[in-house]
Image (cartoon, rainbow, N blue to C red; front, top):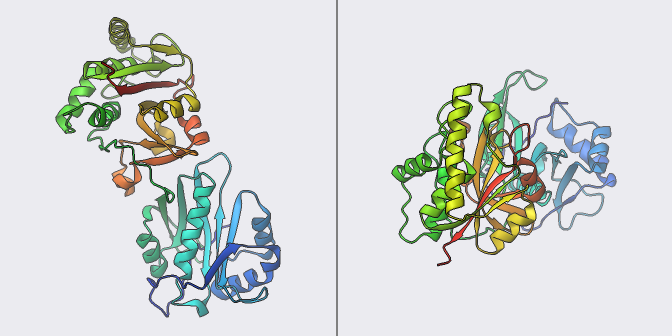
Length: 391
């Protein structure tokens, strides 16, 4: 069912602060009649039915939050509601519907419900919340933009009256930011993610290290496998470790399999041969430097233990899970809040309206991190654990 996810009363300024007497709570079956009445009053089409409300209230993959006054009795009118969907197996939440009573203008109900929905999504280990809104609902669009949502697309002929929908998304961070002293650096090319992760780790742990694009390209040249599936080469875990060692960090390599990596996606036999030789060079140099190599899939516990010891971890993930491209991608794990691994993702998807705020110190739930930290058909696990030089 397609549903309009926002309707705000037009009689009062949208930016009003929330009423201190406002109360937001989970909906109960006893709220069904009032939810249906509010739905009927607010929306002319695309309404949620009583049966659907009942299913949403009873579903483990949804949450319905309602707003009323602190002094309103059990049978008092609802000022608004927000319906949130949290599908299992994903790291995303969807604000399915948001409605505010026409009598609640000026009380900040819509804003309070949006914030409550975000908090609920974060509590359920979602890293982002998405929504669709009618293209002509200017007040709701202003609200979402003011709360940090960014546009990510448009659906034509989305609603029953053929109105297009705008799609918005917001990265969720919770109320307790993690500060580890690791600065953020955005990659300036499509292929230097590994080098940028090294740069961020070095900026904290190597005295005098400077972040700039010249160093970005230098480190990429030092650690690259020469070729990838197409285009310029990507960084190899052994290459990253060797380069980190040469620039003054201690490194430890964790890979789930021995031998050459990333070759299954390269069709050219000549390219495969060159990549294999480059990787053999990295392995030999890693051995010469006595860099530890662990041949087994690393675990979340390994990453958490390393971060707790003040280390950073350059981790290979599937780019498909971050920006819908099936390419290997490196991110830097540098924090842990007890439920999330905190990462710096050097890729900022400018074409989707992202900013550094969407990629720096991103909290990724343990289960999600474990799921995305692998690449290719073989599920390759690769990471480089970095720390300050001991001597």
